[in-house]
Image (cartoon, rainbow, N blue to C red; front, side, top):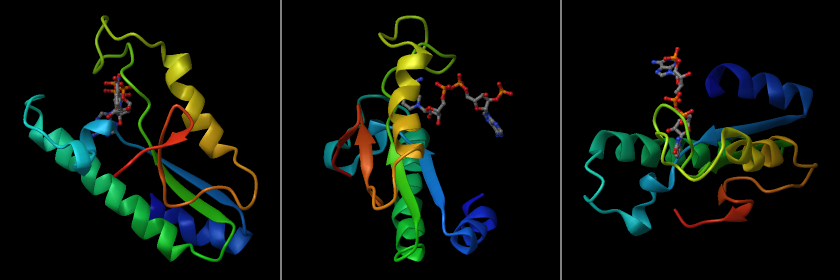
Length: 116
Ligand SMILES: NC(=O)c1ccc[n+]([C@@H]2O[C@H](COP(=O)([O-])OP(=O)(O)OC[C@H]3O[C@@H](n4cnc5c(N)ncnc54)[C@H](OP(=O)(O)O)[C@@H]3O)[C@@H](O)[C@H]2O)c1
């Protein structure tokens, strides 16, 4: 998707890429306790893609960021999750609607930057 669309965004001089990742992909807190290694590695890899896209789009008005939506009541999250889908969408929408010169190449949760 990024390979297809980011060049067009750069041509239009506007774009906001928001990759929906997970804190389970954070290397600085990587453990085996969740027993979902493929999921975790896929999110770590997605975060790396975010960094690459942000770098490739550097100097343009195209921003690329990763977001952890938080534990949410969906098929994956299950009914016990504390958060609604509306609440989970907040930071995603916030990143998708950042003004020019907003953050790029970052990882966010609850509208705050978190570690990789
Ligand atoms: N829920 C959480 O607690 C939580 C926490 C952290 C991060 N996330 C992330 O948030 C994102 C959304 O997750 P969710 O909780 O909304 O999960 P979900 O309810 O299971 O929804 C996943 C969606 O992905 C689609 N999908 C799955 N495999 C696909 C494929 N191969 N090609 C195209 N579409 C595919 C599914 O389509 P169908 O409905 O057609 O199967 C479904 O619409 C995911 O990236 C997840 O990793 C979720």
